[in-house]
Length: 92
Image (cartoon, rainbow, N blue to C red):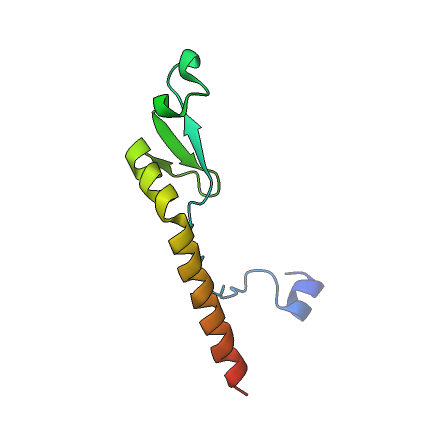
């Protein structure tokens, strides 16, 4: 063990990492994917959609449902953030 390790607690000393929960992905940007080059650019011929943020894949039906509900989901997320910010400001 070196001098700096002993002074600064390095080396084999274990440090506990704080678990930070990642917020759920809103799947707001869905990129169409096609199986055939001839179908590229035709939204109705897309065989699957990929979320640009988390890379999760969705069927065309799932993508349509997500796209239709994005405004509502974003509004709910915004309200949650506002309410949590208001709760933090009330605390000393």
